Picture 1 (tube, rainbow, N blue to C red):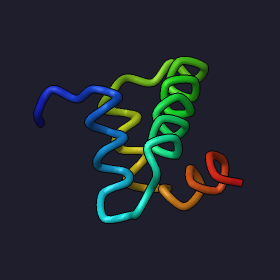
Picture 2: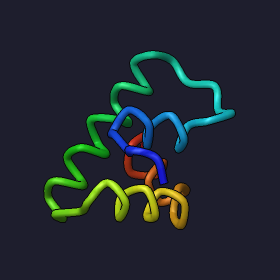
Picture 3: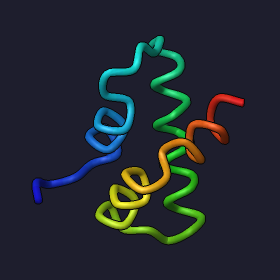
Length: 62
């Protein structure tokens, strides 16, 4: 797997979805806060995003 970053995970998570720059930034901030609070590695966060993107979007954008 490539070197993952919050930017890369955020890009993959929102790929193909029309988002404003503010929405993308808010999503990235949420990912950072969630990963930090739950002590997730980049790989764990990436896997979580693939498995449950709908749950993430509900929390970020509602």
